[in-house]
Length: 130
Image (cartoon, rainbow, N blue to C red):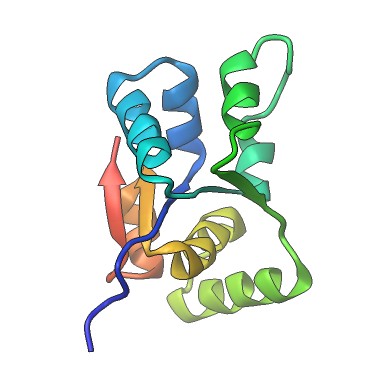
């Protein structure tokens, strides 16, 4: 059986930073997701990695307020799944693992500035590099 059809995008910290910096490719990806009604998922830990000052991060705040954007909380079950993934892959970055766990439920497509780290966690993951 093939992989599930991608239904949405999951962003890592690099994706949010690129969006904030007005990267053209990120702008296009966000607009396309909006146009297609596809969700954009930002794991809560990723948001914590980049969030510093709402007054200066207006673009990210506006993105997060979008109808198709979901900040996914790090629940107990998700934290355990991410921790187990770190154990299996012999890595230690829980936030990267939480991105992969979110992508598993969100269509397996991650927008990332660090594809190698995410593929170490799941080699089958579809990563859109930025």
